[in-house]
Length: 392
Image (cartoon, rainbow, N blue to C red; front, side):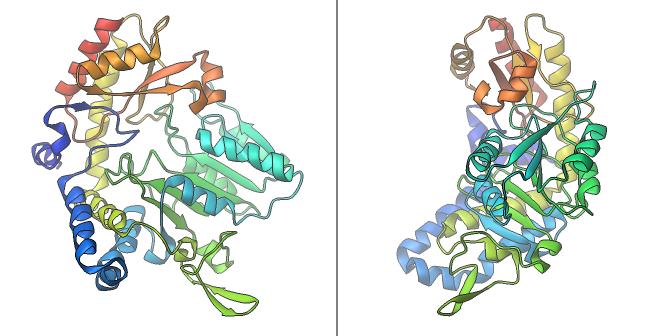
């Protein structure tokens, strides 16, 4: 069972705020803050290289803890500076040619869509969007048809989009793609830390994620899962450096055998230590307990919001999680945001640029994004709803 009182005591940011912006950046536990501060303080006394050498065993706990969370092996895990850092390194393993097809969803992360456009400009690739069914889910029949017809080079699906709480069926798509000659990437930026994510069961080649959101970790930390298949095929990033590979002769290098071939030499060791602390915190609580409680918060949020008139809830699908997006007609999004800030309630505004295709289909230019997490309470949801009533 989840001890909410203890979790809240572990979270100093909750003393004077109702924080419902966990899809942006969540409040870290005190242990995460302490891990970062302690490491930086030691580094200032000992020296950067010297402390790294002394702390190597502790720093390597990143791989065992990340593997535990994702049901993988330590050699499948790499540390990254962000989810985009991890995602781009994964895409860079693909040799694109003119006419190659990328299949994705309309709700995929805005940065991913921008990268697809960039690939089209540079290599002449083509991006195909999977349709949605009447429930608001990815249309799996349409997905299968497009896989068969286009024979894509890359299939990329965001597990939980940033601008909606819809949980996309990445597992079924993984089963569809596992025997195809394509790369399958899952963007788990918004799902790890709030949902059970088993990387091996997804049959994905790569999975990227961040720590600042539902993982309750520091900004500037991400992770990349690399499948056994890709490791055995010697897949590697386009631009490896001396951390992921060894220069062995004037014109050759040898990449590491593990996913750490995707890492760079330079990154913030204190941030990595804080990421380890956040992994330990989640693994100790257990993700299933987090998910169960979060579903209670979600149900309470939806019931309260749907009882109101003058506000439109934007996500409707078979499987939802703790990102709730709302639209208030004829309202100014920045004024809406500042209203909540004046009440010491943290939310965020998703503008059209965060999901052009998705927002066009919904006929809106912006959405209020409210994203509770397991340290929040139903009482805090009620505080949000009362503030929402004042606007509508």
